[in-house]
Length: 513
Image 1 (cartoon, rainbow, N blue to C red):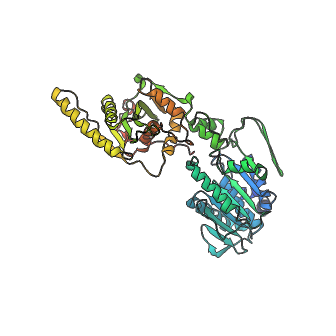
Image 2: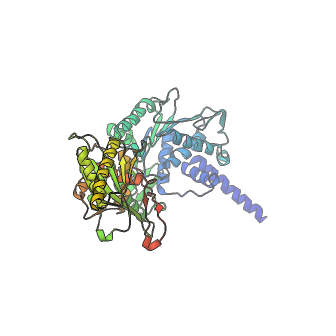
Image 3: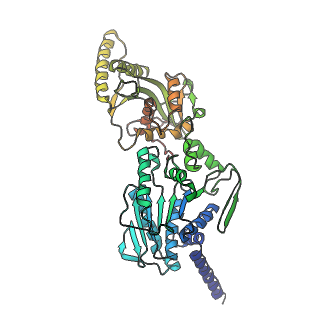
């Protein structure tokens, strides 16, 4: 008898959970995590807050919605994978268009959302929602009642398809944030495709779900043009002052400096992220994309190293040819840099010397040879584009002359190897330089105190910004190339501590901008 009562109790609880899940989005999320994902939902107060806003968006009480929150704080999970199936449960005829920056990503999210609708757990809640087998693709699926989910990317025009709700999720790649043409393209997609796709111009809804990545990103433009049109949710990882969040049935008072999701990232985690990310922390975590006066590399994080503190390193001479000699052209640049990995597997990048200028070919070769003589064990890597092949030919000829003379008088020969390499075409100069941020802000990139050209290198580093054109950033670019050429370059481990063979250097992952 007790077993029967126990089973009845369990069944009653299950039925209550299902009824709550049908009525409330946050309860639906918890139910699906438990019964479809088979793990508990790591619920935080901001999830309940967003769910209340999404519920109003679903009901047409909100028609323009912007939700900003840090990366990996469940914005896509909550606002797409969970919200769309729940909304179809309320109305199986509802039509959605979903857009994000890439076809692969949009198809993946669409497929995952469809899987939720097809799950047994979902069928327990909404048995009346079934998918039409004649239109059941990964990026475009419909219900038997005429509802629809259509996935696209912001690089493709949407024609012939209309919707009740348009969800735009991270419409621009973070790596393209500083491209004016890329930002314009997303804005044109919004005005040309998003605004024209709503079936009901008055009650149709547009939701923009994104972290901030630039002052002039789509969020920035929309809030600048018509801020009063948008229900704007701005969730910062850390808030400087006490804040009160209230919407519908939800309310929460957040203390000053309280982490947004303390179970996911506490104060120590956020401090570490802030140190590693620098400027990008303010942009992506704080939703504050204003570009500072000094750009990405702040003065306070510059780190010197004395000669006697430098560990055993592999050195590399990096050369940027920059053929043009016009005053407005880029400097030619030569840097010597070292790489090492200590006993704790911590990487260290050191810039030893820097020579730069708008030299003619003969003078340029002289400076390269001077760097080779100063660092005789360092191989030379010379970018082939921009006249690199011509520079290499002239350099080899001059080295032959010098070595012939050196032999005749018994002086050491120049034996540095010289390698031409092609700069990869799938990453821009700005993206390369941005990869140095983590090293710079964590003191994993240091500068030799007695190094040549360090004053100029400071000026170039501190004023570098990805949103403006520079003709004096080739020095930084050569250092970034050290990290990029990890297939050719190697870094020694601390042989005094480990006495192991040299392993290939692998740059650690850096934060997205």
